[in-house]
Image 1 (cartoon, helix red, strand yellow):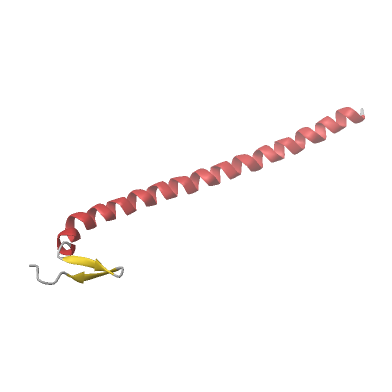
Image 2 (cartoon, rainbow, N blue to C red):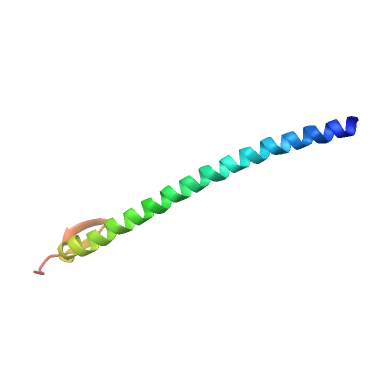
Length: 74
């Protein structure tokens, strides 16, 4: 009888753990989905900046991690 009770207890613990793991998986999927959407948004912003602002930046150069106007170029 004790063995049967022990198996029932173990089964209940496993069921609780399974529920916890499924909740963790659902949370991880929600985060993954959010990051995928955020990545897509960032890529859209980057594309916009490349297309619209890139032409302005072509007349600039990088110096000490700052953009400065190119001297002597139009």
